[in-house]
Amino acid sequence: MLNNTSIENTLSSNSLSQPIGAPHLGAPFSLRALVSGDCMGLETFLNDSEALAMGRSLGSIPWMIPSAIPDNDHLNPRSCNDYPPVKNIKAIYGINLPTEVGAIYKRKKIIAERKDKVKARFELDENAKLPDDSLWVNDDGILFETKDTPQTVVDEGIVTCSGDGTVPYWSLQHVNTWKDKCNVEVIELEGARHREILADERLHELLIDHVTIENNFTTSEDKV
Image (cartoon, rainbow, N blue to C red; front, side, top):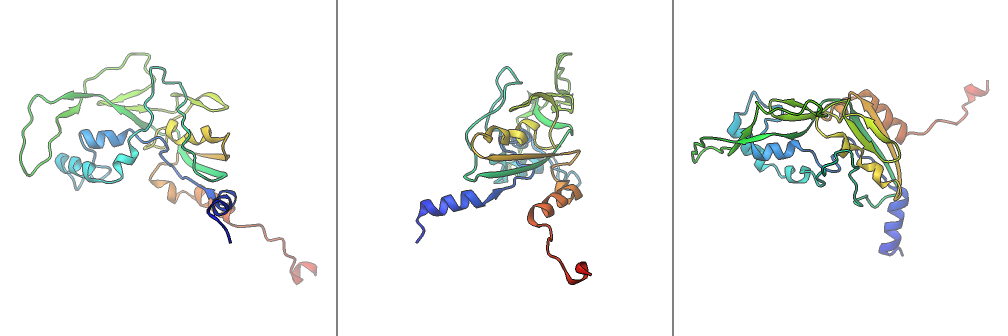
């Protein structure tokens, strides 16, 4: 009979963790969804108040709040020991798309409150300016990393890269910090967007290659 330790060892040795576009350290846009709201592609159906109410009601948002806050040196690698209890990890995600990494806010001068509406106390500062040597792009108060933004990758040093349009690169590539704990393989898909990656043919091919084996059987026709 297998005890708990034996079961855990079996699962660890024979299981594969395959995160696809996973926000290992969170995604900063989740904070904006809580502070001022984000329609998340539903602009046709939601006004600002409804977007804010939706952001504050989603159970998944707290899980996407960044779990590691960058210090003054933005090139420092983000690292923690939260690796999964498996020996093999194959991470797949998109790269080199402008990706939100933060936002600049200002306090609203007037807050009109109604019982049937949710109002934000802060709003994006669309007139905020960044230093000329800033490594991020400011788009009406929302900060983006780009394919030219320096990033630190374990065992590779500094590279220029950005995330998948939703999750920043430093959060996607966090799996590299687990290489001393388990077998890690990282596959980066150029231009694959976070939401659309599941429909990406490159991902389909990778998944098929992983779950299938080459047919080495010889048929009677082959012998002829």
